[in-house]
Length: 268
Image (cartoon, rainbow, N blue to C red; front, top):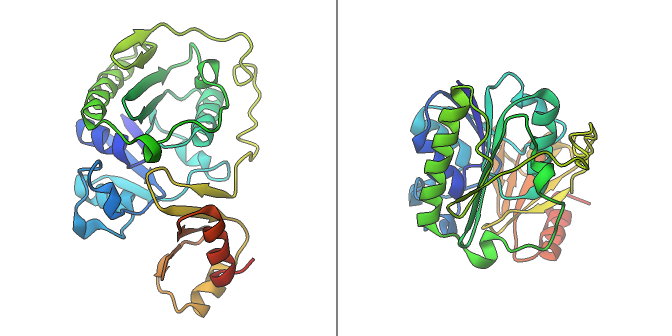
């Protein structure tokens, strides 16, 4: 079974060791010291390294250090199952649209504080049938994560993967130990064929949950910046910056500070 796991944070750490198959890991983030207390697969020697690379090498899986968006979502093509371990709704809506349109089973996972959810979409309904576009909710940064609950979530996902691999349908929505029956929403725009996230509805600056880093995506000349800052390789570090070909991560205490640093070092 070919599986892509998107996100190597807390839920990814709970799920990845439990699965088997031809697995590819995707993550856009870097290991920070603050991650170590709830992302137990990392150690101090992994700090300042890409999460996907660390776990890919640890478990001998393929990995991609990248930010999944509408321009590269086709990387999911040809896989039997997608598992979402991300930390934001926009990416989940994007995954949902792609998988719904292309009839690929996928599993949503989410945990914030003492609230955990798992839902597999296998064709009877989709993520948008259940979840609305809401901003301003609590995050793992504001309320933390219950690690025992994360372990339980990992086992629930493991069982759902086994069901899907044997051709069975989704169990519905698992929320804090209880299964809730889910059915298709007749008003769901995705089930009606509207895919606005696939058309590019995404913010250019993102704050990573549980991280002090902001991500910028946009037009900048990577090779020019690399030459100017004397960087080496396909990505490089410069002070508080991780600079990739298509994006930049900036360590900052606020969005305002991040934008200021970006303008000063990369340019407006």
